[in-house]
Length: 539
Image (cartoon, rainbow, N blue to C red; front, side):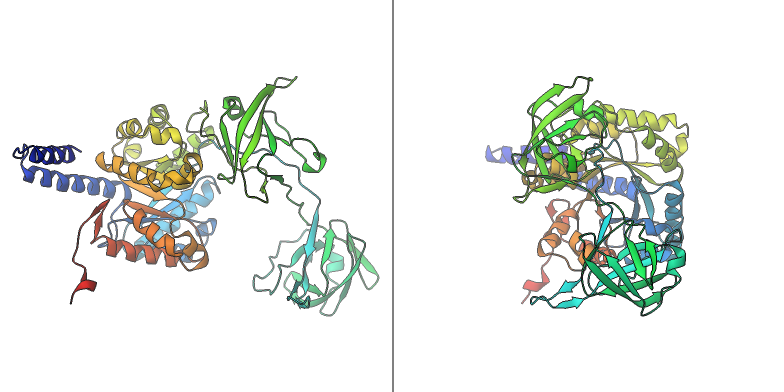
């Protein structure tokens, strides 16, 4: 920062006809020294990147990483530098298995792979919505003329036995899993005809076409609606159907619709609410108390935006916030239970760590290399975290632990300078730019500049950054990157570390990002172009 100010002073002096106030060599040396300090801090926090790749790659581990070491081995061989565990999922037993697998494959590939664990922080979500009917559909597929291409399928297992999943390779629509009595199941064989009374009053027939270990596959030429308790018949013998889960009910909301959010603990049933304003609960009652008239309320990662138009108290002392939907798709958005709620205008009276987070923090200190902390809004949140670490009573382990603060809220962004200064009291320190939550709170139009501003301020403080959310997401999920996400990944590689989420093609995404880092390392340094020689333009 001082070097930039000195350089600016020299330029202004030159316009005024003055000589340089500061020696140019001091300015150049200061930039080089700053780069070296940032690189040193990044290596302390994140570990050493691969040769000629200035940015590290962090990969989110799925649950399967606890039992499938080949999965973790593939990540490591593709170029993973850090493994991320999300503490919002699974438990300490599964996390320990993941960590053990990471350490095993790190020894095999001959380099360190660090483990970062995300603490969830307080989550504001929609409350419970009553489940619907316990009914399922077995569906055919048809061509444009209506001809059946693939039959409807039933995946039948014995009630009370160990679940047997249906093969993913079955053509057409997924098979409807149902359970029947063990005695009735044992009589099924290839060619057995099963008569099914459809819930709409129609009769359907399915024929067993394949027999598996613990399951049979039956196929029929027509779709069928089947509910729990339906009586199936085969050779004059009957069995009731079990195991069909209830339909997940949702609330369809369009622009202009009203919704009541309450701090009362209740279960909303959409089937009983025709003509009435839906009234749903919130998992954190304090959040409802913090909402004021005019405040924005965002649901499901911003898919639904609403504004508070009224706030009232019920006869039994609960707070109700009436919302009007201001943004949704033209056909409406279906809001389900336990979907995220963002309150960008409301000040929540909550600590950044829940009681569950404090318990998990002890595990993280003991077994992980980095603790990533969500919901950081201000200096008080950082001080609360530092005190929680001190209270663990293991100063050696705490000092070794890397600390990453996730910048994902409007207060966190606006108070970033003080958050950085407070966080730097912990020597092994960095920040994560959580673009997903930031986009929801700030608005998508501001995401063109905000991540770069955060990186610039962190660079001035010599604090390493991790950039997260949807980097090469299309490639990780579908195997082929979109045109835009390649240039987005290039911008992401200005950070000291880039985080990738899960997907069936994640190894390909790791390899592409590694190669991009290797190439861009010679042409860009943070936001500065290095003006390397362009071989493509040589004659």
